[in-house]
Image (tube, helix red, strand yellow):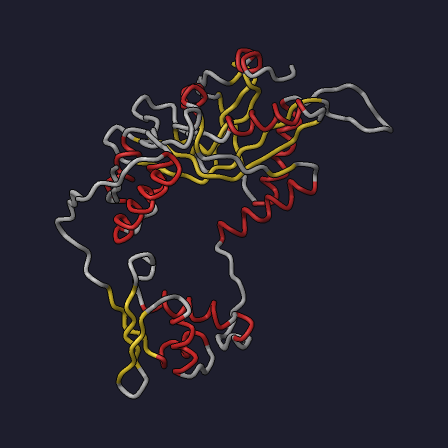
Length: 349
C-alpha cells in the first residue's frame, strides 16, 4: 500500500506542460501535508482490514530523504494592532492562535510571540498571515471603522482620455452602443483582417503560447472581427438595427520582432436604418450613414479629415472604401465590407 506526497511545483509544471489535468494533480498542486502520509497509510490499511479482511504486516519502506523542519514565525502584538487598527491584549492574541492548533510561546514582555506552524497549515508563511487569522477568529466586526486620512484629489483626464470620453458620449447620444470584445481572436479571423492595422507585408500576427481556447490563440490586429461577431449575435437575437463602436488596443509584430500596440477606434453599422413604429422605410444602412457619423466625430474633436483612394484591403469593397488622412498622415479608412466577408460571416446584405 503506497502513500506519498509529491512536490506541488513539479506536479503543476508537468500537468501544464503536457496538458494533463486530473483530480490527483489538482490535489497535489494545492499541497499535501507530508507529515500525515504515514498516518493516512495506517488509516487506509486499517479500513482495508476492517472492510475487506486481511492482515496488516509489519514493516514499512520509508523514503523521506529531506524531512521538512518545523517552521516558526514571530508575531509582534504591536504590529498586529497597527495593521488591524485595534487594541488586542496578548492573552487574546494567544487564545486566537491556540484555537488554530498552533503552539505559541511568548517572550520579551509578552510583546512578541513565537508561533510553531504545524505541517497541515502550509499557507501560514508570514507574520501577516497570522495577523489575518487572528482578525478572522476575533471577528472582523470587532475592527473599528475609520475614514481614510489621505487627501482626495479630483480626477484629471489626459487629453487622449478626454477625447475618448467625448466621442463615446457623442456616439451614445446618436444611437450607437459601445461594445468591449476580447483582445484574443481566432487565427482565421486574424489573417482575414491582418491588413487592418498595416498593409505592409512586414507585419506579422502575434500568437499566444498558452491560449485559453483554440479559437482565441492570436492577439487581434483589428477591432473589426469583434465588431462583426457582436453584430452577428445581435442579429441572431432579433435585433434589426445594429450600430456599435469600440475603443481598444490592437497588436502587430514588425519584421525585426518589435511589437506594436495601438489604441484604435472602430465602428460598424448594419441592418435596417429606420426601424420604428412611426416610420419604416425599409432602408438599410449604407456608406453615407457611417460617413455622417464620422463627420460628427470630427466636429467633436475639431479634426479636418481628407479622403483619398484607399489601398486595397481584402475585406473592404473596392470602389466603396476610402482612406482617411489628418494633416497628411494616414489615420484610417471608411467603407463597406466586401461581399465575400458578408457571405462568410452570414451578415445581412
